[in-house]
Length: 159
Image (tube, rainbow, N blue to C red; front, top):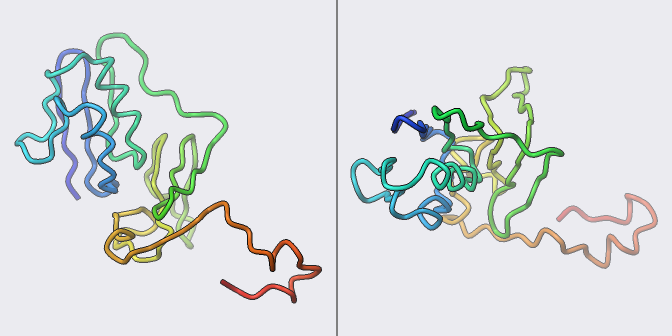
């Protein structure tokens, strides 16, 4: 796992490779700062601390985080927690959550995580973008007629 820090006198941007789901939100939101093809891939002095904080908060996986050094507030987690099933992708979770393994050990999280839905991630429970490689599809709001008409669990077939 790589953990990198990029710093100015106003803000420190942290990148955690273990949590990166390769969504590209950072690249699209602030390309003058985030460029995966250029070393270093984060040019933290290319925009204001406020712009960088806003772009970092758009990172759905939480791989990017920041600390403000200029007396401005750090990120405040969403309340209540929201979970968004992204079409053909992960569950994007925002807010203060605890994620535990089957032994009760807590995974490191933050105010944002992307959880795998396709079952193919090599970084469970987090998404690593394997859904794109395997052609995972999902339609989160579809409720089958079978489920609408069911009178008991015996009427439902697993899907």
